[in-house]
Figure (cartoon, one colour):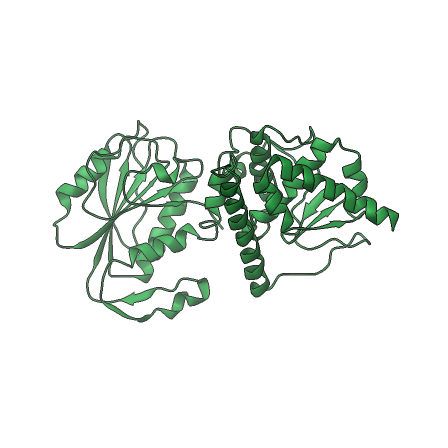
Length: 380
């Protein structure tokens, strides 16, 4: 009993200190259940509860105890367990650690053990973006994974507790409510805005579950007004798209070839364009490569060979939109899709056609695009 009281006292003391430092983070922590266990060496979360080794916490100075507690709370609150999907566990855990540790260190009044993973160059990005970048080159290793698929047991085994869709939805609602409550507390205690580093990741909660491919498919078929019944081929994939008949849609696709876009991204995007063409024959696709100039047009159909990319210079979005303005007849329903990192010169004039920007990981903040809709290119 005395040991249990000691275990609880560690967490209670940490929560009191969190409350003094940050009502926002303290409010989030109130939505977590803390469970002591000797079956893990440090601390971890399954997205629902926080598990900690009391001996480990007691070995740390109190500022680091608070930092570790907050680290796990943020993992849970930001849905890092649920957002992983089918991604590689270790790389995703490293990406999530970079985000969380960046947020904590940016506050200026919390500490973390010296062995934690930190990458200042990446921590301003969302977990999904960091994961994409780490897939290409990961210079970090993970000694103590702390994003668990299921709760640990005292025997050292993990319970087989695969979450149902209903349970996942309930868990997501729980933490979204926690974030909203914490934001309210921040405002009422004169903190004004979210703590440093939280704004981008908080916004990612609304978009992280949205596969960019699904967004692209939906966007390209939403323009015509001649709808019939749902195309049931896509219901199982979560794409509730209407079958479109009659009016054709012209799709102008621009691929940024300025040197910052690698072949993997180009091939990924073009394969999705081919998938669209195979399923929706009413779409007419015209491809352009673009850096500071524009190359094309290349007419694409389901059997087309992908043309060799051209470019390699600087980046300007002006030539592509100027070309489309000259070529569009003003009558055909059309949409522009631009794959880019977003770093370049934008036109002074907003195009007449709707524009979808598909922005690569680490690219320009989506709020900085002067026109059109934006979606981040992240795989699921």
